Image (tube, rainbow, N blue to C red; front, side, top):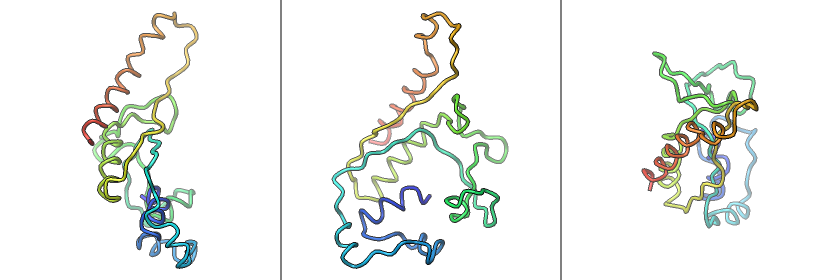
Length: 159
């Protein structure tokens, strides 16, 4: 939630959003009037690195030790109530394949920041290393092909 807000709101609007002021209070850095004017509406484009997405749940007294998530009163989860998974897991423990998450991010940013041009600057997935596979099987990478088809379709849907 704060991930985009903490950078984009100051650069686009000149200050942090009210929700960050409410949740972080005095811990949030303050901008002078001159700094706000210097920052406001200075973006030519946004470069977006997007690898994965998560469901989030409101957790007022969460157990996450990471201050970033604790301050937001959220917990990142990969399985929703009833067993719905966010997406297929890639090799890294944090990386799930969630093409619709990129579509939602692109749509949200376009709406919130007045159709600011967006370039997806990083995107991809990892898979398990298996040096024993023959080259023709390594090159027949169905999961990665599916990954990029899904993500490219999500970008097309966002346009």
